Image 1: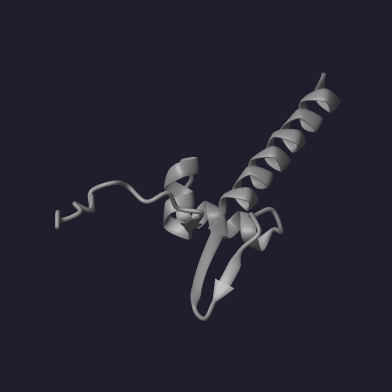
Image 2: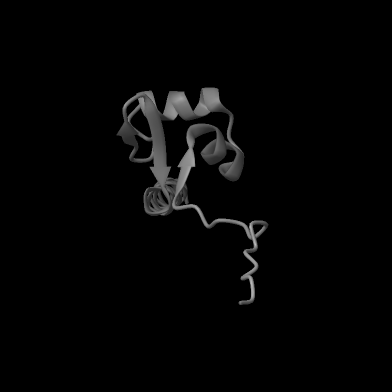
Length: 78
């Protein structure tokens, strides 16, 4: 019987960010993340015990909301 090789080097696609990963992916500091969150402008978070994560969908929604807010400001200024 032939052995089946398992490739353990393939990257696993993740469905969530940690706060640190979210900040790195969006090029913001963690202190800015917490300022945004405290102002009600942060992404939706999921909590499991003490672990806080941000889904890819929540990150997409957050980016879209920030883009829309920036566009609204630009239109008021123009």
